[in-house]
Length: 500
Image (cartoon, rainbow, N blue to C red; front, side, top):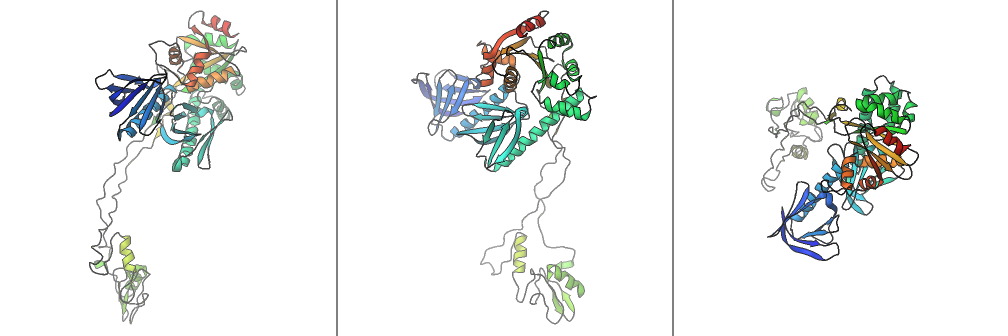
């Protein structure tokens, strides 16, 4: 909650109201509670843009033209602005039907600062005034180019995300990883539906039936003549199969599958981190008193950094080469040492060795201050950890709440497309009409809205019982809709009349 000075600016530009208020983000909405006045509840579906028109001022633009300005919030401005953007990103993910928890990357697209949210099935590019969904089925690759990530789409367009800093390679690697995982889930799911298909044919079918992409039946049957019939039989509700199969005889049928729920399994079983409870020491290293042995033993230890003092053939290794000798050559006997060993009167070898252990030798008494304590070493205890994985067996089109949506697009030469859900009891079939390649246009718009046609059209109807949708794909579907055909005895005849 933040105390702020608020202004409500009307669509014409005049100030409608102002004063002091408490502002907070809660329940998917922005709540403004004026001092002594009625509260204002703004769902994020009504928010068109969030910006900072001037320093220390947050502006919230609504879809009806009103603007809410919040200022004089002090240090809470940054927190409120972050909460506003996080809540708006959550609404955008719900509108787009994005699957799974997102990883967020701040960057720029063109002249706009954005956040790139990478989900399991798509990435969302969210700016202050717009949102764009890029489904992985329509994404070809992610390439790092001059400290930016170039996202190449299958329609030859490119989304260039720049100013990612050190996270440039991380974003590209994550997108490529999610692309591979998406293709793997599609292959595993179709393999469970078509277990009798040989591996090369199954690979070809999975390459066409990418997540959310409708594929014409003639393309599938070119791989194997029974692919379409088998998929329709196993993915369509039994009471709807006969009518769908009969309508497919008179229209250009395309079938597709869209993952509707996450099947990712989080990591588990790890041991918690333990604080360091062992301290570095330099005693008890197997030799009593930390001295080397006599004679050749002392010589051997000296060669590994202990140094040595030779006296008549007997040598004793001192701690890190503290013996008398120049370059490890003893007086009157044998001695050896590496550069860490001390020369005549001591040397820098012991100093650097102690520094490596986190302490030091004070060569000048207390002039340099007390030595700092030994650096502790971590008490590393290995534990069992189950890494994150995917429950591919959970991908199914059956049941009351299937994790995969099966759908069909019936296209005609008149630029009309009918969208039908095959494995859920949807009450109606939606018929659209567009220019150009109608099936591709409608397929992409459906994918960008998460195949939530009922919610989109309920919002487009303008009733008070549905939330408002202002995203471009929802607007496209709303304007392209020409008919709703309810399921019933006359369903097949009505659709045939609209399409053929």
